[in-house]
Structures are given as structure tokens and as C-alpha cells.
Image 1: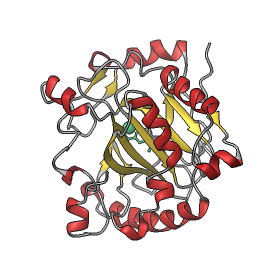
Image 2: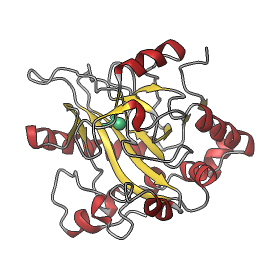
Image 3: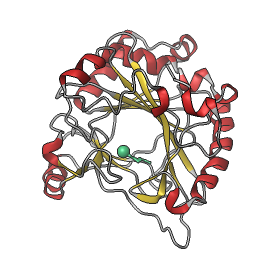
Image 4: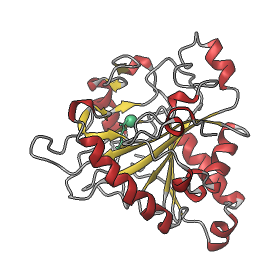
Length: 292
Ligand SMILES: O=C(O)CCC(=O)C(=O)O
Ligand SMILES: [Fe+2]
């Protein structure tokens, strides 16, 4: 049975300094994305930048949580869809324009992929009325989509992710036969993209899921189609994980070909889809700034 743990690349000091993996490590990244639908690259983001953003986003997370039913949560109230503050002061290029993430997505998707989504998933510590709850296993590609790789999510946890604080449960290899035939729930509904229970059990026997430990400073690249679930945070520390999607530059053509089903995800001419779930009203910056 193939390992259920992801491949982790540990770049050398020179690769980190150059912001560029060697061809050998780049090949490992592309191979892992192809076969597993996920790869981890360690030591890719400076800790000071993560700490600064984390301090702000943790404060914002509590502000979002206080909106209760009106908070932008996914599946359960302990998992908030939280955008980073859309202002220059927090736009650290080492995080948002990470050169190694860009090198890998440029190689996997073709040059200049489109950045369509800049957000994050925040696993909140438990409260009396909101105990740690695992999301249904789902695919974020909850729409009729191509069967070849067409989008990657760059996840950047702001602190170390562990099974205790809600490291995402991942089902390696499930991107290959993903699609609407294994899903329940419609695009646009809060609990869309859920994988059918009998499909989960079939897959568990082949390659069961895992919650890997992801060290601080690592980036995780994930095929948008991969099955996964946010897991309840059992600690008293908020766990923020940025989530930024990249589609190939030809996506506009696909969106047309595919009866417009991707258009709502890819606001090519309308950047209002990016930065919707902020704790503060950032005015024009929060409503209309495109991100790439
Ligand atoms: O918070 C996580 O670990 C993952 C959350 C997630 O997959 C989602 O909200 O769609
Ligand atoms: Fe998800």
C-alpha cells in the first residue's frame, strides 16, 4: 500500500536563498502532485513574517467567530473561512508571492497561472457550544471539472499543524478519480462537495487518510480535487492556514467550454470574489482589490 503520508521536500540553504528548487527537487514536487495530489515544501517561509500575520489573523478570527451564525464558517462553526487582511502592510511577498510555490505552480500549470482566491481556513479552539468537530470529507472542486490537473491550492499554515490543533485530514491519490460522481451537495451550498460514504470506505481500504504534522514555515500544495477534511482543534491555540488557489492561464477558455460552471469561481474581470471574509471593513481595499 502506498504511504498515506505526504512527500516532504527539505530544500537546501542555497535553494531557500535563491527562492528556487533544484531540478531534482522540482521533479519530486511535480511527481508528488501528479501521483498523490499533494506535496509539502519545508522551510520555505520566514517565521517572522508568519508570526506577524498570525498575530493579526488570530485577533480577526475571534472577531469573525463573535458573529456566530453569521460568521463565514465551513460545515461547522469551529472552522472559519477567513481572508487575510487585504492591505499592503500585511502583504508579505515571502508568504503571498512565495517564489518556491510560484516555481512549482508555474511548472505544473504552465506559465503565469491565475491567482483566483486568497483566503484561509481557521480551526478555532473549542468552546462550550462549539466542541471540536470534523468536517465531512469533501473536495473543494465541487463542480463539473476537467479530469486532468487544473488547479492547485497553496496552503500556508501560520503555526505548526498537528493532529491536535486540526491538521487537515488528507486522502492522498483521490484527485485522480474525483468528480461529481463521488460527491453530494451542490456548488454554492455550505456543505457542498461531500464525498459519498461508500466511496470513502472503498478508498480507506486502499489508502487511508492521515493528518500529517506540517512544520511552521512549510507550504503545502494541493490539487483542488483532492479529498480532505478540516479536523476539530483540541488545543487552546487558534490554527490559521492560508489557502490561495491558482488556475492555469487558459482557464478562461475552459470556463466557456464548460458551460460557465467554473466562472463563478474564476472572477476574471471582477475581483470582488477575492477578499470577502474579513473581520474589518477595509472599504475599497477589501471590496475590489484583485490579487494577481
Ligand atoms: O481547516 C482545514 O484544515 C481545512 C478546511 C477545509 O477544507 C474547508 O473549509 O474547505
Ligand atoms: Fe476544503
